[in-house]
Amino acid sequence: MCAVSTLEGLLNKLATFYGALPTPPRDPFTLFVWEVLSVHSTPYKRDAALAALKRIRALTPDAMWRAPQKKLEQAVGLAGPYNEQRLRALRTGVDMFRRSPRLPEMGEGGAYRMLLFAADHPVLPVDARVSRVARRLGFGDQQGSFTKTARSVREAIAKQLRGSPDAYRHAFLYLAHHGGATCTEGDPHCAVCPLLENCPEGKKRQHV
Ligand code: SF4
Image 1 (cartoon, protein in one colour):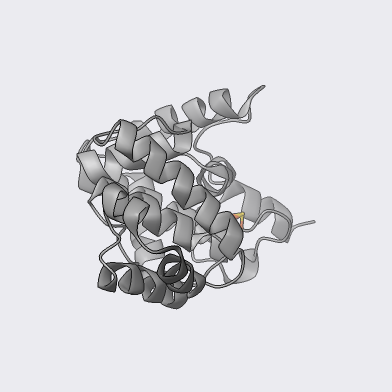
Image 2 (image 1 turned 30 degrees about the vertical axis):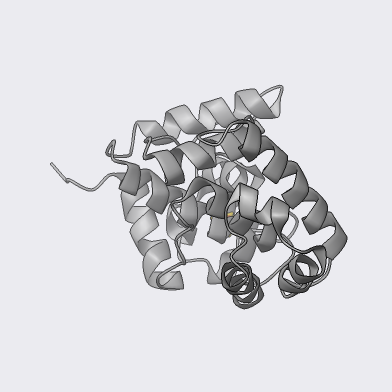
């Protein structure tokens, strides 16, 4: 019997196609900051902003709370536009982490990412990108709500993955990256996708 599941085979193809992807930080608060800086940014700009926050020693909830506003704005501004929105999100996060440092209350997606990357739980965070790619590949179905759809994706993928946190991290990183880079919402680039021969949705689109 083949030891590699269908999904693992697809993930291996994505890993070959995209190469190594940056792994999110393991410290919960740094992970939160990394995610805030990643939105509408590039890996280069995000990493520059994170390095600047590290230089001004603002990478704990208390330190960020005490950090001089001007320095904070300059560091966060290196991530690109939407500085005000980012600062607001960071302020909200600082409050949450100061109330509950280990695992603050956050939305379902954020909580799953926190569990997987910072607490080593083998769970799959399902955001819009992961949900889209997984369902196009035949893992899970569209349901009446995003939460139910996410559950269906999670269950379909759990049947294919070995139960280690590393396997789940690998799956999340590559499915999410693929959803942002190639398997986009409105115009997936199926003709160049390395998964085309295994993808029901891609084949359907090629024959339209
Ligand atoms: S073939 Fe198209 S629909 Fe399927 S995973 Fe690739 S980009 Fe997405």
